[in-house]
Length: 127
Image (tube, rainbow, N blue to C red; front, side, top):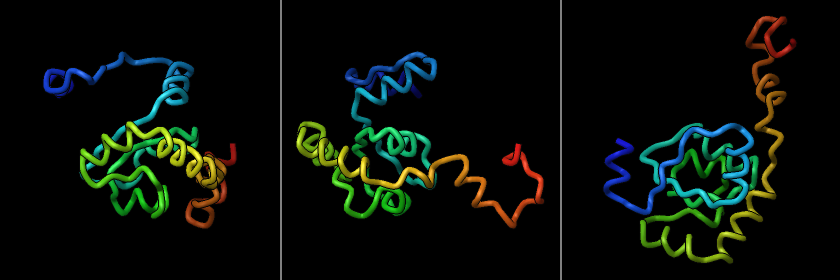
């Protein structure tokens, strides 16, 4: 599939697996573009949120839930996505929006607290 993508769109650069530091740097210095058919918890989206990395992404209910209805970098079609990617003011607005989101809900502590009362008293989160 990656080969097919690369052959279809020469502007796509397939990167090799990188270590955590290189991945953090990659996200910190770029804008992410995604086109999803459906979504629930999307790791790429969550990683962008916690790093305040602007993400140009199609509007889906689960994405509205985590990014907010007013997220400025939602697009409806590829023409709008291309316009957003070329508009530094909109990308900056996306960054400011992400910067204002509560990141506490994405921590391990918040995840573990969400399971209180569901799991037995002694859990791996207590270690």
